[in-house]
Image (cartoon, rainbow, N blue to C red; front, side, top):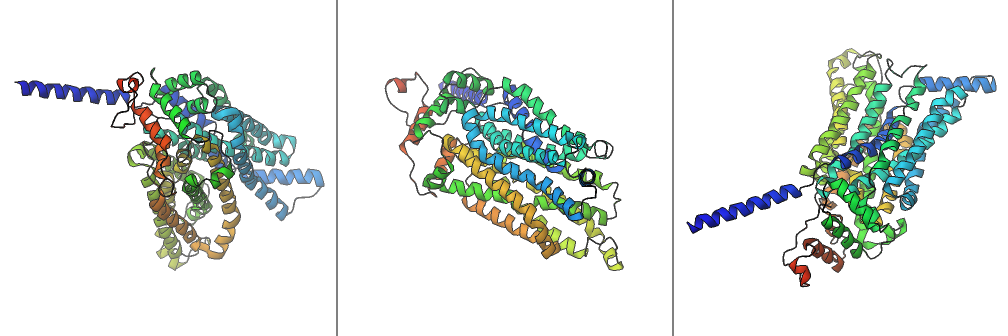
Amino acid sequence: MEKTEDTKKTKDKDGDGEAQKQAAKPRLTPCLLSAAFFGALGSSYLYGYNLSVVNAPALYIKSFYNRTWVQRYGEPAGGETLTLLWSVTVSIFAIGGLLGALSVSMLIKALGRQGTLLLNNVFAVIAALLMSLGERAGSFEMLIVGRFIIGVDSGIALSALPMYLGEISPREIRGSIGQFNSIFICLGVFTGQVLGLPELLGQESRWNFLFGFLALPALLQLCVLPFLPESPRYLLMERRDEARAEKAFQAFLGKEDVTKELEEVHAESRAQNNLRAASVTDLFRNNAVRWQVITVIITMACYQLCGLNAIWYYTNGILLDAGFAASVVPYITLSTGGVETLAAICSGLVIERVGRRPLLIFGFSAMAVSFGLLTIFLNFQGPWTLIQKSVEMDRFVWMLYLSFFCILAVIASFCSGPGGIPFILTGELFEQSYRPAAFMIAGTVNWLSNFAVGLLFPFIQEALETYAFLVFLVVCVLGAAYLYAILPETKNKTFMEISQSFAKINKVSGSAPDKEMEVVLSVKPGSKEMANGMVPNVIEMESSF
């Protein structure tokens, strides 16, 4: 009888413990969801939109450039002049992005994460006005300057937004919230493709509205984001504003008692030798973060050099050769944007179960396989740039469809991991004082690699033809191999725990302050252990962040 009573008590105790765990499990609060949604809407969404929006009106913009040239100089612009103007219009976006990435550390230090995102909307609205009114003003310079300014906006957004999302999210759902960045990039690309259809804004009389649309997401973010909290970690560690930090934690977590979260951030502050925001030079000189820096550089370089941008170059040609009419190609191309968005959403749903490391390695590996198959299929189908099909080519016409399937596979593989996780990792691999400089490095690598692909790919394609994809295959294989060998899993870990996981490879020993942080987090304020000045034998991480 006594045994039965004891068993019952044990079960009740276990049940209470399980209930407490369930109650303590972080949930997606309206405040956190709103911050992620509207933060991404006015930031990464605009970046994705600008990647695709110039494709549909390209002929109309060139025509506008030519008309303006005739009005000014009395003669049509030469072919080389038009090509130069168009190249500048497209590529200056990356130059603006680089400038934005280089300035983000200074802006975040002065304005905070939320303040930087809000200021960034001003750039988006100015760019929208310049690009939408350029034709009416008879100035193609306005269009070029507008592209540069929206590039600056994107460069700032791709650093400030992942930093903000990473700092406001509980560690158990930090990956899923961080994937809002990738999902909205894909949604932006898809929106640009849809609005560019001839039935909508892809007409000569309406293409200006494609650029005017840029102001809408920016204005929506400008209306909502000021009513949401700033990053509590930023408020507490850099502004020393504990009252606002406590309110921010309460809003994002949806609970009143946030003592553990505040204690964790306080302990992290004590654990860091220098709370002054580190510079890029400091980051490169510090042996304790050497491999974190190398990992971010390689991951961001692979993000751009893995060949996704080149895929867009081939899609329309393969579809035309497969026998699809030119008038229906834009609609079939929408499938690429749809697959991209679906893969990003699926990645966001499984990232907390699968982890960052497996998704990245799988993504790059699957891209390598897809590029290899695509090279084989393109060579079987012959010189696909020729519209005429010989009898021999007709025997392999089904290869064209397999080639298009490989393109979809490349896009899906990219968005399953490499498309969004590099931004999440940049925020996770570094502690508070190093994070702005880390995002500046990541952004610089990102935009320089973007510019390099745009500049060099035409020459690679001309020299290697269909074998050009083997270059990207090598990049994907090397990226996957590096991540397999070096990258630890960061899922469900605090920022301090992630930093400690690199201690061995960086050849630095774990510091005493790190132990202190773990002890602080394991002891509840006012507990017997705290009162007696003792620490418990078992150290448990109870905080959500």
